[in-house]
Length: 298
Figure (cartoon, rainbow, N blue to C red):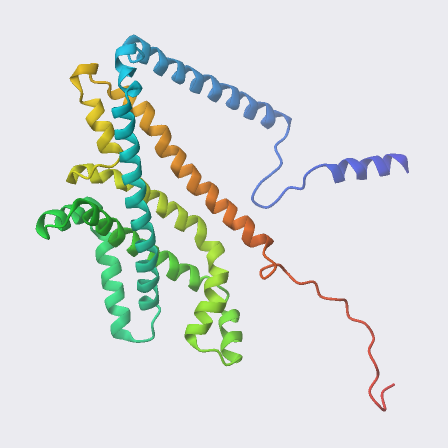
């Protein structure tokens, strides 16, 4: 009896195997540990080699890092960062709005409107962002900021349109049919039933596309827009400080990475807040109990 209980307890403590993943045995776990140790050694060696090259090429000399001590250089970087954030905010808001409009057009029951929206989405998704920005800036003679925002909006808006359309179509068909059975119109079904449920599925992709828009704001320096990368380029090309290209990259890159990570954190926070929302929380159903019998019932 004791052996049976011990065997059951040990079996309960072990994780269950699934059809897609088998529990690794002792030999496999040792092999995975060796793989992990070898990978760590390779990564540490690669990092050490990069640091050695940076010191060997005198990238940490005081002369190359001296520009960041001057107030004028700091103001230049802050102004460029502000211009980058301004272009991103404009492009993000307009891309979301354009994506919603094009998605509604693609979901429309009117064939002409659906064809036009499909043509616009496929055209702007296929066009390179840089080509659109240059065309708007050179051919249409638009100022740098509107040209950059327009190019980012057209591209990212067309991509987000497909994200919105796919997200709404991914909602269970029964939700749509139940809403129509209650007498709701198509606009009400999409706005109050389908879209709120699709937001959870769409949110990671939306944030990923906004990260792409944030990084693509760096294309503004090609049309003389004074954004963050443009400011870094001015500092890196300064002969008075021995062309501090690597120090500029080491200062600008973490800021770009930090902004992208902040967007990802914001998406995670929104998703957790939605899960805690009372409107989206599952409602418990009381178990069935014997009710009052109908007259004549047994």
